[in-house]
Amino acid sequence: AFHVQYIRNILGLTWQDRVPHTDMRERARIPSLECILKSGQLSWPGHVIRMPNSRILKRSLFDNSQRAVGIP
Image: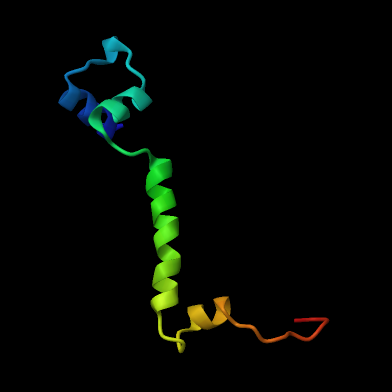
């Protein structure tokens, strides 16, 4: 992929050096995709909590009302 070639170019490596992608990310101090996704997952609830109570998303997530048993 382009981003891997770009990181290789920045670090002065070639594909013949056979450096794993994880090592290249560590050398370039680039966070892994997993870390980026986790930080996004942690910031989303903060956005929802700060929404006004009239928003449908907030009402559906934090609704404490009881539902009737049976067919929805």
